[in-house]
Image (cartoon, rainbow, N blue to C red; front, side, top):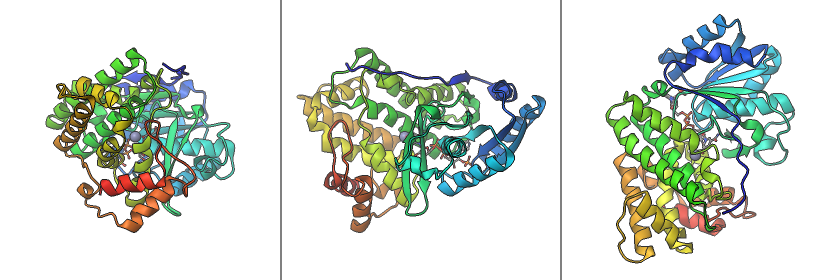
Length: 392
Ligand code: NZQ
Ligand code: ZN
């Protein structure tokens, strides 16, 4: 096992009615003015936003609002938020929604606190040195941004989707009420579950020896999420299933399943970012579209690891050597994706990727051929193009 640094400073308030704590929690932060930041309207339709405003009013906290964050959140909205915060003297940001609203809030918090061009942080030109405090009220179990150190933003100028990771990005508190996810369309529920699985798999597929405890946590998390997704897709208001998925979403991306496992692989995520940037697909769908092709491309680096996944997560009976078991496990996961109506190819998302688009994505993902991605197998520009082509 490898040494590790585990930092989860986000205070989590989990369960029914916890959104009622919002005003008191924000007040505790000692801030003067809050930006309430949200998406395209689900929080209005569900009545959550009104409850949040009422809670802030009750606590005597003043606030301004900025909605309209779209999935694959845009840099232009981040810049709009930065200007609003400066004008209004905002010193705390409350994101109400999913990964997109939360990531947009995090990016605004860096831009306000550090000044300059916020895109610098996403291009790796500057380090984030300070951030406004951020709190979240989560409405979709998926990205894990409610406890993670990351934010992912899309720059419309060239359609670059880029991430920025910093310990300053971890929210101060996150309110997780599984009931708030009842209104999710099945596609978003399933897409979120793929993301949760992928955050665990990206950390699981590594070449180094792993910590047995971390493996058991990761394998258990994946089994529980897969089982409860099927329940939630049948009954959207099954509280226990929604709760299992929601908590798994946070634990899958707060670092717990990295302990002893180093930095993980992350190729599928890096390659999905280009799909999201170019075609604006739901993040989880983009991941399931690429994963099987990636897995077949790399498993020979350590078939035993994929065989362990096949047996312990997918319930595959040993079918011979590790390679045969590994392939059976990959196929079982693809079958699972199909069973929850998630794509297992780019074509399944009704996108016919052209050779020119594949070359563009490989070029962007490899930063013009200057970097490789992947801890399980290092992938260069040609490997990326081969995987995109295989996933067509
Ligand atoms: O915009 P609204 O109207 O709120 O609708 C959203 C959106 O259309 C809807 N939705 C959310 N909660 C709902 C709901 N609809 C009905 N009822 C509810 N309770 O769902 C759609 C997706 O929302 P979004 O916030 O985009 O979803 P998600 O949480 O999957 O976030 C995706 C973004 O997070 C990034 C992704 O790349 C993508 O940009 N990620 C962020 C990470 C991080 N910060 O750590 C890590 C991830 O790997 C990921 O890259
Ligand atoms: Zn993800």
